[in-house]
Image (cartoon, rainbow, N blue to C red; front, side):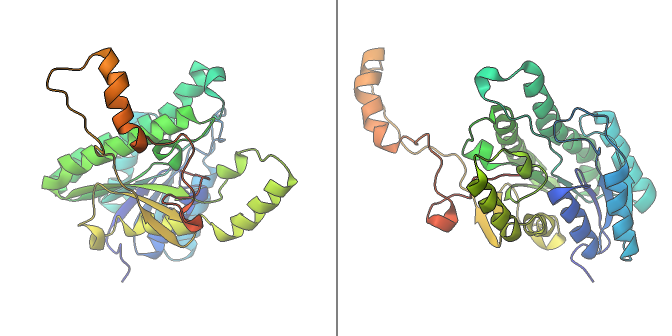
Length: 312
């Protein structure tokens, strides 16, 4: 028996990249899978296609598993409710959601349009809200449920040209934490993953020169989508029911647990702060603990954080 035998899992963005591998691995572990994918481009500018989701569902069925496809958009709450109903109709229920669906609209902030901001927020932040809102009541009723949301080092650490993407991904981390806190009494757990993998999404990020392209080709062989997908699937299994409210990273065969924001310095002035004393006393006292704008080095190079290329 697999780790997800008897369970039903909804995977959004399941037609490509990490989502595809999440769907395939969940099925290998015995889950019945609803494979959702709009089938659109990364830029989000087309109407999509049912093809990618159905191709993955067919692959699962050909291997002896059970799967159905869905090509609706996670940006539409009613459509996500429809995914839940599809899972209940086809397989009798729903026990976990893995939500890597995403797009990119990378641009420097001073050039970013409202449309470029809204498109990314809609798919990532609004989409994550929608899949949680459409399933939370069912999970509460059955006193069981698991969410696997996708954050990014672009939000946790920052990445130039991705203010829209980073903002959405940081918001997802906060939402996941609160869902975990609120859901604990009903055995509902929620975790986040900041994956590192070469996928259709990361391959769309421009490279500076041929040397960078060559390095990317080498890394593509070492940092695959199936590696973070395995962690995603593992964390929605019953065996991981005690793990909730965490932020993980996955890069190649390295799994990372991220710290979460906590106070690191405090200055108190009983007589009260003025603008002058804030600048002359409080800020200098904290200055050695300020975080630099540069990103930390990858863990594989001795740093404390994951590598800069992100997906999900």
